[in-house]
Image (cartoon, rainbow, N blue to C red; front, side, top):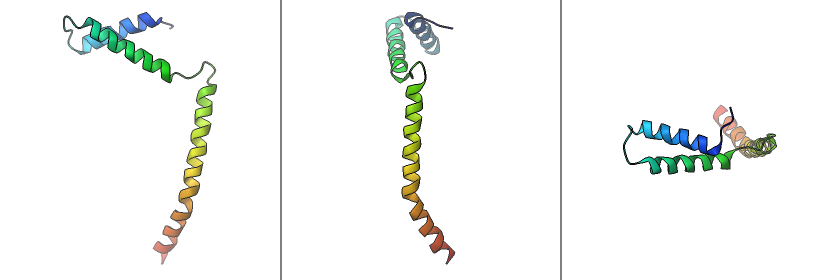
Length: 84
């Protein structure tokens, strides 16, 4: 279900208020916290078609393979020395 930015922030601020025990006089603080959370979510959101996420995963895979290749010779040496 699609919600507007203001709807999301209002609902999140209400949830924060409830979780805090429904204190009086802190509405603007809860709203500001919810707005910050929304902005963080927007910054981490992937592109609509997922291409951004796919590129990140490809990069992560390349980094993991490179790390495995660097650690592979060390692990072979350790296995040989432990067999003696």
